[in-house]
Length: 109
Image (cartoon, rainbow, N blue to C red):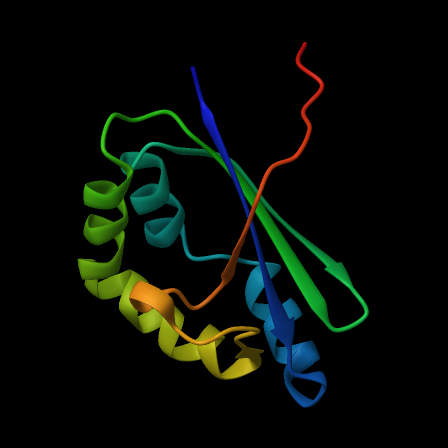
């Protein structure tokens, strides 16, 4: 069964167009690494200057898979472009850039 994750971050208004342009054509290697790390249905929504991210995790060790993503050189180059477009909403607890959200309800199929 998949675990669902939601997260939130602020989009810097002066970098909005850059961020949207980058995400109109996410690099295939970045997408492949996410799939290899058992990430499914990854979606980012935009509301004003807030980005809401959602994904389902279908693996057995979320922390290890997240570490594999973070160690990937292509993902690191991607983050070097996207991170300056964002502003964290909370201090980096345990290295978190996006602020994790608590799931309070889910309508299952």
